[in-house]
Structure formats: structure tokens, C-alpha cells
Image (cartoon, rainbow, N blue to C red; front, side, top):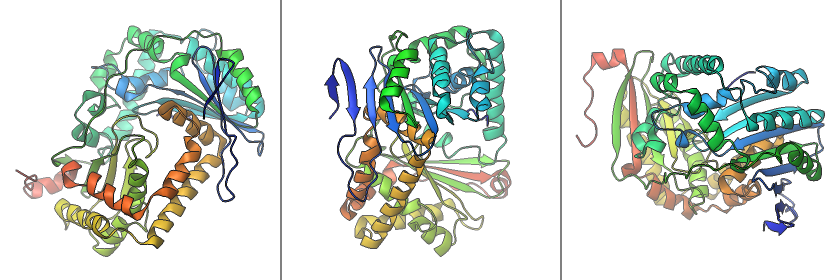
Amino acid sequence: MRRRILPALLGGLLITASAHAATPDRWQVPVSVKKLDNGLTVVVSEDHSSPTVGVSMVYHVGMRLEPKNRTGFAHLFEHLMFEGTPNAKEGVFDKVITGGGGRNNGSTRPDFTNYIEMAPASALEPILWLEADRMKTLDFNPVTLKNQQDVVKEEIRVNVKNQPYGGFMWIDIGQQAFNKWENNHDGYGSFKDLEGASLDDVSSFHRDFYGPNNAVLGIAGDVTPAQAFALAQKYFGGIPARNAPTRPDVKEGLNTAEKRIQQTDALAQVPAIAAAWKMPDRGSKDQAAMAVLGDVLAGGDASRFYQGIVKGRELALNVESLYGLTSPWEYDGPTLFTVFALYKPNTTADAVLAAMDEEIAKVAKDGVTDAELARVKTKMLADWYNGLESFINRADTVAKLQTLWGDANVVNKIPQWIEGVTRADLQRVAKTYLARTNRTVIDRVPTAMAKAAPAAPAAGQ
């Protein structure tokens, strides 16, 4: 990540609008969608509560689609998108946006790369000009490539190599849990692969994946759909569509045998564990239930894992959960529900796992109470709506949902899906997905501890 600071066919254009009325107790997020002739999809969420706008440009390419032997290339390319064009040299993008009181960022994920901006509404037109300009072409040159190769390598040093635990709960765990290269390679990248990237690689990647027909533009805030569509047509309409490569088949089934790995960590002071289970496919009837179950088990201090493992048995110091690098709704290929915990040196990874299994078994056998389910749903709905208050987050959310689901109005369906989860659903997904056979575990032990005692044999060995 770069850190600087139903559908209706009308007149040959695909237009989607939120025409149905909201229920009295549910916020219906305004969503209007239009597809330009060149394939660019534009999603607008009109809201005049603040004279500002959020903009998100999402490209349907991420770590899964980067070239083999070029691990980390999608992330490197994200950085290169800020290095200027023949029309707007390096630094212009940031100066235009931040100079007017705005902010911008970008990030790379397995299935998408997104570029986001927040600014006064008067800055919308310049932002769209800048985004269209770098969609057309970049300033490909050896200096900027070398500069950003070094920036990404330093980012890896700071965030991974010189950090305790080094992101093992989202980098290493995926390498162990998945079978296909597209899913299990290190998307942050190896130094060798990053250094091997050439200008031809950069140019080809931009040509293949950064065309308008592989992108979604999200705009939220103080603008009408008609205004936003007109501006999108003005700045993007003349960019030709491009032929993107055929997407590989990245599907994987659930794992059939538990995987156990032990690692040592010279920088860690206490041992840690990451336990990950493959999630349901996007769009599966089990997706919402698994999202709710994840919150029941590991969603904060009131969760079962926290109450049972941290507070009750006092085995762990913390419990956190994550869904790959995104959320339970924003993926377009295999992903993981991962639980990460620092555990006490006087216990073992086996004891922590046994405690997790006990809590999972309780849900699978007895379900949850009505009160617990209602509490978790209320928390998830509050978190969902709070995340949409910010225009930059809302623009980004609807753009990502349009990219991954082909339907930005999923933003209004997710609350319904959450509300529709039953106690029986939680029992079913607990038995199906949180089985030991579908689990991958990494036990990350401080080097000093590993030297002091022999490593316990892995399960099944």
C-alpha cells in the first residue's frame, strides 16, 4: 500500500438506479450505475450533506494476476501509477489534490488495485482529468522504475523483515493454505523478482490491465449522477477499450487435511499462532453466515475466542481476525478466515488450538443464543453503515463491489444478508468450514524459545 499522507438497458447504456424505497429502519445507500461505450463502469452515490466528494478508481487486477516470477509486481505497479505521465509529471497528481485540501492513496489486494481521493466538490473535475490521464499512459522510464523498486523494497523491510511476526498471519499463511500459484505466492514480492521487473513488464501490465473496460470509477458525495456521468464521458469516453488477457482459473476446494507449520522469529518476544480456514466462495449461500460466525468467534472483546481463550482460560494475550487482505465481502477468489493470537510462553500452540476447537464445537453443537446473534448482527450493521459515512470509503466500497460482484447495489444487500443469518446457518458453516481438515496453522516461536526447548512434532507426524 502506498501511504502519503434489475439493471435496465436504456439507449445502449447500462444504467442501474436505486429506485425502491428504503425500509424505515434501514439506510438505502443511493446507487446509480452507467457503463460507457468503452467499457468503463461509473458508479455514483449522490449525497449533498457535505460539499465534498470521494473518488475511487478500481482496476480488476491484483496480486493473483501478476506475472509469474514477478511476485509483488502488482504492488510495484500501484506505486508507479503515482510517478507521473507525459502530461502531468511526477508530483503533479499529489500537488493538485493535496493543494486543494484533499488527500489520496492507493492499495493492492489479491483481486483489485484501488486509487482513492477525497477533496472539495470543486476538485472533482481535476481529479477525473488526472485519473483519465494516467489511464491513458504513464511516464515509463528507468529512473522512476528504479526509484519505486527501492521504495517497495524498503516498505518490505519496514513492514515485514524488520517487524516481529513479519506479517506471517497474512503472507505466510496463504502460502501454506492455498495450492495454486495465483493464490499462494507472496504478493508483497521477493527482492529478486522486484529487481527483475523491466520497463517492458511495466508497459505490458498497463496495456493489459489498466484499460477502461477493466475498471470501475466510483464517485460519492456532492454531485448528481447526471453531472458525474457527463464528466466521466468527457474525460474517459475517448480512451479505447483494450484486450485483457484471459483470467486463470483460481478456484480451489476446501482443504482435506490439516497443515501445521512451525517458524522461528528472532524479533518476537512471545509466541504467536495463526489459524486459517478457507472461506466459502464469493456469492455462496454460506458467505454471510461465515462472516457472522467470524464475528461471533473473534469479533472483539465480547467474542467467544476472547472470552474463552484470553479472559477465561488465560492462554492468549489477544485475539484478532482477518479475511485475507480485504473483508468478508470483497474477494473474487479463494480467501481465508484467519485468527491470530499472541499466546503466553507457559502454554502451547496445541492448547490454544484445543481451546479454539472447543468454542467452535459449542457453536456447531448448540448454536448461539438469540441475544448473542442479535448483538453480533447489530455490531456488524453499525460497522457497515459507519464505514459508508465517509465519502471516500463509500466511493471505494461501491466501486469494489461493482468490480467484484458486477453489482454495486450489493452495498444495500449486505445488511439484508447479515440480518437473514440464522442460528442454524451458524451451526452449518461451523461444521463445514471450521473443521480441522480445512485448517492451516503456523506456530511462530521466538528464536530464543525454540533454542531452549525442542520443537513439538507437527500433528500427524
